Amino acid sequence: MKTLLITLALLMQAPVDSLPDLSHPWTLQECMDWALEHNLTVATQTITRERTAVEKNTAEWSWVPDASGSVSQNWNFGRGLGGDNTYEYGNSANTGFTLSSSMTLFDGLSTPRRIQLARLNLEAAIQDLEKARDDIRVSVAKAYVQVLYNYEIEGVARRQLRIDSLQVARLQGMFDNGKASAADLAQQKASQASSHLTWVQAENNVRSALLDLAQLLDLHVWEGFHIDRPQVELEQVLLSSPDDIFADAVQIRPAIRAEELRLEGTYRSIQIAHAQHLPSLTLSAGLGANYYSTNTVTSFFDQLSNNFSQYVGLRLNVPLFTRFSARNQLRSARLNRVNQEIQLQRVKNNLYKEIVQAWNGAVAAQAKWESAREAQVAAEAAFELQEAKYENGKATFTEFNEARNRLVKAYSDAAQATYEYLFQTHLVEFYRGGALTL
Image (tube, rainbow, N blue to C red; front, side):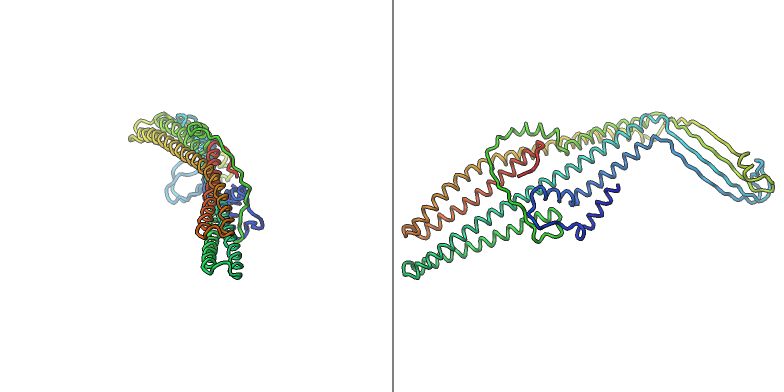
């Protein structure tokens, strides 16, 4: 609990006391670690886990006998009970001391079932927390890859602008020497301006993607935030079938485990409801003493000694008619079990659907990546040939511009295919228990 309070205090003081270090590029792991520490959804789920732990502790201590003490003071006027335990007229005062304890000896095994249910609820809450953490990891990885992709597109736009700038400088020199027309120079300058606009838009897309990532991380200060750009080297990955992936995932995914624990908890709830039909036996014991202030002269401590009493008792409670409350609780518990079975199957179906979608995405991304690589190589070769022709006056500006546009598109398609393939293949492995890395 102390750790939780400290965590919450740090969360509330984040704008001042938990400023991020933006002096270096953040890796994917650093982004994940920061998100897991500062994300409010994770913090809320942590509170739920702590509250469930408190409930478990309460259930575990329910076996222990309770103890209570009391002191009472009464004033009587007129006819009342005196110190010799007879009724008499007059004013009197009575001081009483009691100490009592009780313990349930048998309640149809309801108490141990409640303890087991509380433990299952805590384990389910732990799995819910881990699911929330996994969801954050996936979201951060997806946003991180989007930033990397936008970086690549910005680099492509920058190369395009550099190519056009070089062509403008070349044509300007030729125009000055009377070897190029004003129309050719104007066309090239228009192409340069268009490339510059594309580059500006690409830079804005990078900033927008960084902002999305920073907001996902709950960074209160994000100006200057940038990420590490690792070298991405992809190879063909042999993917298992979706059924094999699902068979592994269903054993380890926290969402499935949480619902399985809740299903087990419904059986405990049925047992608890059954116990409402059984007798219960309670043991009680206590101590007591009284002091009566009347016309007698018996001292305070003598009276306490004389009036000291002890008792031990057993109470057997047999439910004969509970107005169908016990019966209806059992019916509700059984319905909850059926509902939880449906919920477990629903979560399994959703997991299978996610795995199939990720697998299909990975297969499609793999095919797209292979095609994009071939298209990029072909576009580079075509552009180099067309550029040489254009510079030697053997190709028109339109032909050169078309080759350049095909090259830019090939670069963009290759970048998109690369990061799609990177994310989808790692996502598939993540379902099987692998780490989200680049």
